Image (cartoon, rainbow, N blue to C red; front, side, top):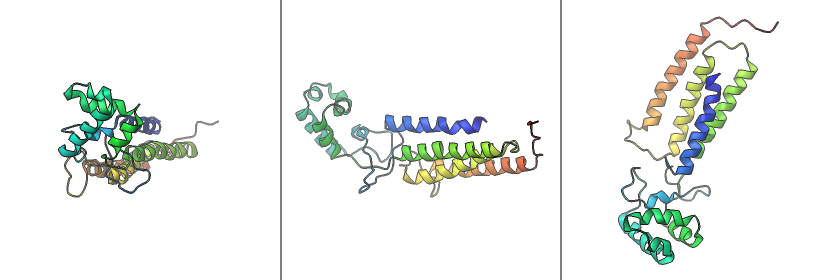
Length: 199
């Protein structure tokens, strides 16, 4: 029963990643649904492949200071944060800065949909259709489907750590989750079918 509800927690976690501008997607020029993250103007970004180059960043800062008095008045160390803050209320600034940002896949939303909503729908449907399901089957399905969906969604996510061969770390660990899920499934199918509690 716990694993049926777990995908909803994953859904809200991925939505929070999107709102906070974390775990960015890969560059997606030409995609109409691509999104841009203003955190890209932050210097020395901890996220590999995200931060714009220093020349472009200096140009963005110069334009922003010219366009918005609040940015011009900000402490030099706080300029990028002031720009991000003012972009919410200044459409002209938002448009100008946006010209320098990279369109990216909304990988957080892809993961929210797959690992959250779709996985919840699968587990909930199985739970409702098969009330006498053997113990462990739902857990097995959770591990297997979560791992498969993670492997798929990681194709669109900018790797935030070194690759393991051709796989991202998320994909690499997901392979082990599939193995664990298969073990749960084998164990569950060897158990007796629970007796019905309906009289």
